[in-house]
Amino acid sequence: MTPVADGVAPARVLQESDLASALRLCALDPVSTVLAATRVEAAIARGLWSVGGVFWGYFRDERLIAFCWVGANLSPVVPDADPEALDAFAAFALTHGRHCSSIVGEADIVLALWSRLARSWSRPREIRADQPSLMIDHGPLVAPDPLVVRSTPADFPLLLPACVAMFEEEVGYSPVSGPGGPYESRVRTLVGTGMSYSRIDDRASVTDGRSRLPLGREVVFKAEIGAVAGGVAQVQGVWVPPAHRGHRLSESGMAAVVSAARRDIAPLVSLYVNSYNTRALAAYRAVGFRQVGTFATVLF
Image (cartoon, rainbow, N blue to C red; front, top):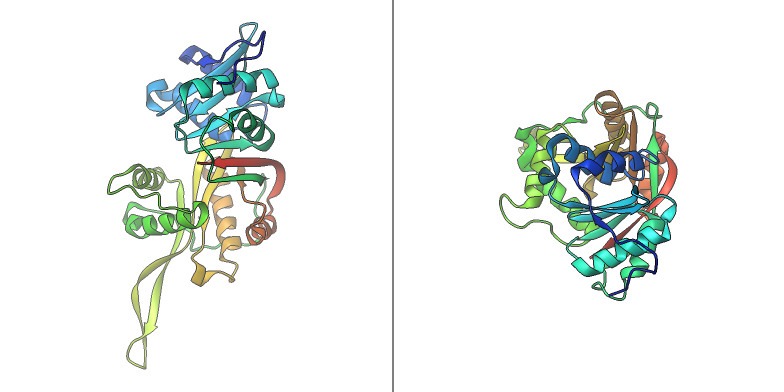
């Protein structure tokens, strides 16, 4: 285990009395901290027991300097990448072991924390060190697709396979663990809380040489608002099936999501995307997103 540097106080688990201070740290940069801030706001509203994870805090002179959300993901909030806070979180993480599936957040913080853990934690499947963080705080620059609407529970049987396909394409393995598993529950919750948007079209085929009859329905665009806090709505899970790509559905679809999210959820909409996904970057910029930072993700 890497020891805490001399003179550096150890990290500790935050209590409910610390959460207001954690939220103030998030407010310093609400776009880069929205993942952690979502959990802090939920813990303030419903209690620490309700959020399915813990918060680690680092204090200096009795003042909270930095914290991490630790659940399925580890999301650090460390203003100015404070090295003493990173040392303390690394020591705490090495003591408690790895239970998260990723480390995600502002790139310089994530990569600095990972550099302190790399020799002791398991080898990651992938390190995505350059993920532009984008935001839009005005109406979209392209016309919204009127067929992209909030998903309903009746759409769930079609949406779940689309979400699984998106996850497999993005991350490289299936998130499915059986009926009622965590991923299925997550998708169902997003739909039930109005955080899922989709366009579902009829499939059609010539069946008798004279007319086209519908053969079921399919998701041709989908996206979710995966985190909301501090006036920021973060879009996740944007996906168009391969057969429908090249028709600018992602541009008009994202324009619809931006319009709806800014109207109903939060005035600022953000997302992050892999730098090598040049087609997605071009689509988001066409909608009006601009880069405001860089994320990184360490995937296990």
